[in-house]
Image (cartoon, rainbow, N blue to C red; front, side, top):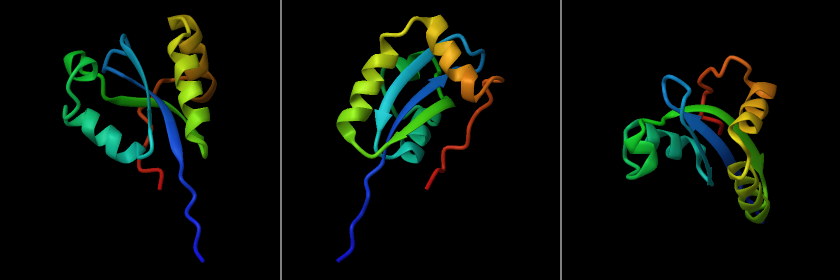
Length: 99
């Protein structure tokens, strides 16, 4: 019998000038980042050209991932920036082919 572990990602993306932050959750980070990059996601990220992955966390429980996404969304801009700075102080675009 083969078991497949499902992974979930809470991620933060920004625009080229790092002015706008968007927090989301997905089970396929590579696909979701591709969608943001190519403006296939209608709404906020398309409108504000938000497509640069700068932060993510990995979970094996969807409920924990959703809870964490909500927690981060509730953070102030300064607290989100501090979180990003801990792992990516230059806010460089991260590779999103994490498989």
